[in-house]
Image 1 (cartoon, one colour):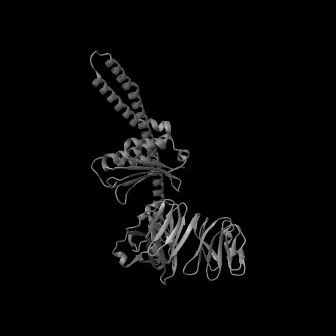
Image 2 (cartoon, one colour):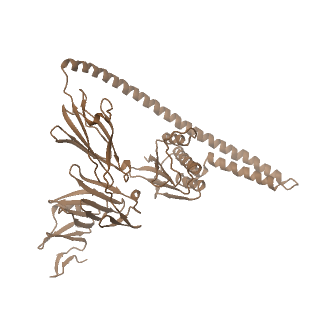
Image 3 (cartoon, rainbow, N blue to C red):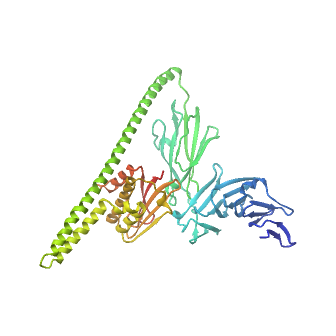
Length: 514
């Protein structure tokens, strides 16, 4: 609470009451505070540079330095890079508790989103990758990082874990190169000549790595002209690059894939050229063809709009049919409960009046009654109407499998505004998935998770440790997968299956909450 004091001469270096971290280099002593930002002491005076104004009002956790002499500041508002008097934000809107530097790699520990790996690329600037529980971390709440010789020690709220970055660079291949037509792999070895009026090219690539899922790759694209100048570049998770409206000339596309360890592949080179405009006679003919194409495009747009309208009407009809089917299920369940069970109870009472021992007969009646009640519950789940979707899903997994885990995000029930019909379809999808697991996967345990994604999506996850399967494989019997996809489409939801790393399958259903 007394600031920072120089021990040798007992001189006060910083009089504030909230210093949180110190870092000294050959030039300055850097002082991080809980609310006043960052200060520098040059041996004579302590002052705050104007570049650090954005850090005021938030806690500073750590200050460190990389091999090039740049200062790295981690704090409540993210991770910042300070060089040549300029402060740049590298990671925003994250509470960064610790930062470590190993060569050209920067590591940031966050309070909620796991470990961030940052690296500088000469073409694309700072690139980052997020490491979380999918990569083996026990928790996404990290408070400390300790770099060792070949790996990191990561301290989380659930223990300490070692992480060894990969050393094998990924591969990159071209999966599709398209302009007016699709180009073969042999044509990519030479130059692609785009005839007039083609002035755009679609390039789609794919990264290959044993430690990175396909959706986790980052792709960098550079478009260069004939003299090697970069005229367009792109870095994202999108595997497609579509340079358009290019003037006449020769071009080169360099594509790179970055894996989760931010290792770059060897560049994939695609050369192409855009042809000059032909003579006016050809241009006139092309103009006529263009007019025809525009008319065809307008007709196609009208047809597409009509088809979309028909598809929308068909979707409404399918949804109404599904709702009607559920109403019919309720009616049948009600008739079975009110009439058939009543008849069985009457039969049981009549059997009690028989003079002979009728225990076996009575037991058979009770067995039939129990089975009818189960059928009624399958036809019309009363738990869904009585306690809501979340509790109904927990009830479903409890009665489907013996060894299970169930978790749900906090206050999720309050955020669910789905209509009863949509809730019923989600329930039926979960019921079909659990039935398939029980019948076909030989799973010993099942885990169900319900959460809300960062994109404000309702997410239902069902994981098992049974036999993995390919949902896209054509089979001669069974309609389980088809029913699941059909019900998901009725409520505008998306479903995915993913094979787990060791054994089992992960199923996901996603639907926007809004």
